Length: 125
Image 1: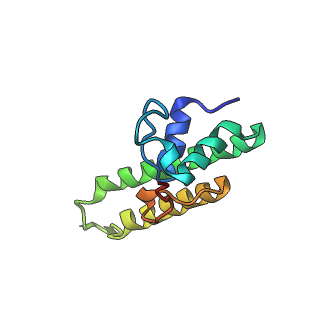
Image 2: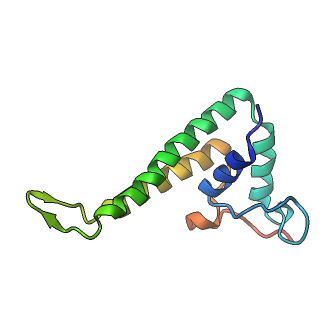
């Protein structure tokens, strides 16, 4: 079963790649980035077993991403009775989330995209 548009969007986003838009028309399409083109190729040609693994990553990443935003609830509290918040919680959760994002890239055999802070794409002229 092929990925839904929403799943493909989340997979691209989690791997650090920019929005795809309405398709491969115009100057900013996948043809200008080798890794992005390879990602699109693989998104369309995974086996059912591989799609199941990718969907497991999506569930895990959604949970980790939500945990980061949920941690913001206690950012205004430094100490409350015997409880003291972990001042590094958001940073630690973000590192864990980014680690899983890189693992997803590894599963796809794709370098991490630009939003993961690595030069994973190369402009092809």
